[in-house]
Length: 127
Image 1: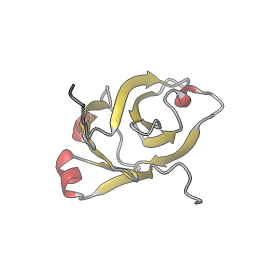
Image 2: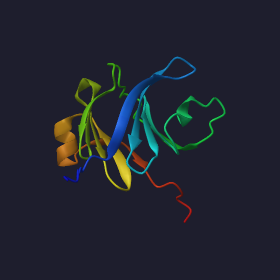
Image 3: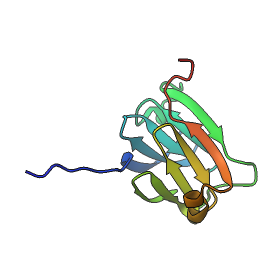
C-alpha cells in the first residue's frame, strides 16, 4: 500500500460569489481553515463556507491589498503546488505555516520581493 505524502497546503479550493455579488476564491487549508482570496483582500475563516454566513460567523481576520492593486481576472486562483499559488494576472501567493503573503508576480514571490499583503494564519494571536 502506498501512502500519499503531499506538501500541498491547500486541501481543496472553489470559486464562490458572496451575498454582495463579489466573486472570491475559497481555499481550504490543510488545518481546516479557509483562506478567501478576494479582488482586494485576503480573509481567514474557521471553516470552508463560513464566508457565506451573512452574520460573519467564523471570521478570524482580513488584510486589504495596497490601494493600487486589484485581482480582476476570474477565476482568481489558477493553480497551486506546495505553498505556492498562482493567481490571476500573474500574481503569486506564498502560503506558509504561519502566514500567507501576496506578491505582484510569481518571480517576486519566489524572491520574496515587493510584498503587497500579508495575513497571519494563526487562529488566535492573543496567546
